Length: 182
Image (cartoon, rainbow, N blue to C red; front, side):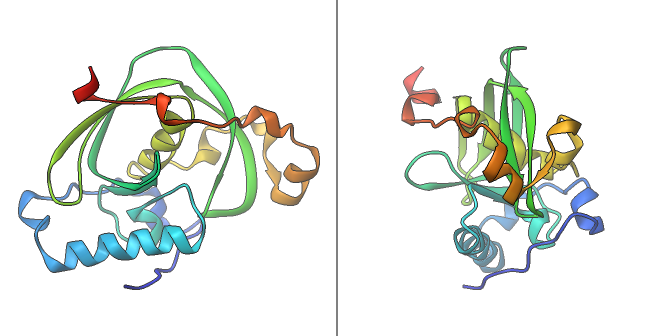
């Protein structure tokens, strides 16, 4: 496995719409190796998630941590289940040392495939919904700074010093609902 180079804001790969993964790609050793590398890179940088375009691969693949184990989302589709939004502080490995407040729908439906091509669906609320939307935005060339409340954008040092950290909140497994539970 390898740690991949993370693209930073300004690199054109971060502004592309990523291509879908085709069914025949799931079983290829190259795709499985890429998934391993994506996960290792996310872990190395202590991210809550990482999208393929962030490591210079414009394909529709995301890895993130929704509960105890990392999840791969391949060709994800998000449906907003409410117009109600939560506002929270976000950061991004591709926009290092910055934070800003972003408002996002707080209840979504997610449909995707795992890294082996098995379909899955969830309803997500709270922080899992936020991180999923953040990572999936990357697949459409959108960065959180495109959605940030402009007056809240700050450097990490100032964020740590002045931001109300209670606004970020925590989440637990009750915020994640699989189709089997419904």
